[in-house]
Image (cartoon, rainbow, N blue to C red):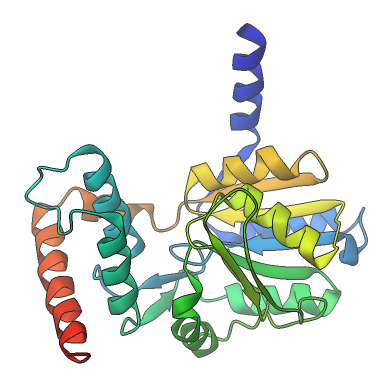
Length: 262
């Protein structure tokens, strides 16, 4: 048990906390002094990492909060839906109309610079492929372009030993809420790619830990827990007024969208 605890502690310590992407890019530049660019993979999450919604409606914090209520506080008056399928359906429906903003203005330019140098770049998001069109719209709007070789390949496949669909296209991996460590490992095997070094960035610590646990068996992994949006997320979760307002607006939009198909 002591050995297991030590192992878990070491894994936890391997996660790097940061509130700005510049610290990540600076670290990557140092790694480039020792490794060829084609042996480095840069992987980033999307929501509350490179982009965030302009309002609380259908935001990452909204769905995370609602999922937690379904799991742990089903009697809460702040819970909008009783089950995950309806929650996800509503989120997807309303996300189609949501506008995003960059978390930090310089990120697209810095990622493009990595691509020019020959570093492979990818998005690994928990979003499902049914909102790929809307996702691409917002990425393009904010000058993100991950459609670079060698990730011109595309595929859609069920993740091993799960019911989650992994959809990979234009350098964007949409994982339908899958375990991101297993998902990234699965994708790299499909693409027949190996790397000496992997940079992974996500606002949720559980994802950084999972990628660290799975991929560190094969590569040196720098896993960053990005916290730039923490202030906004925590302010939302601590405000019943904000939660109630976003619930009402989301439900109104969801019902409106549903009525279009009647």
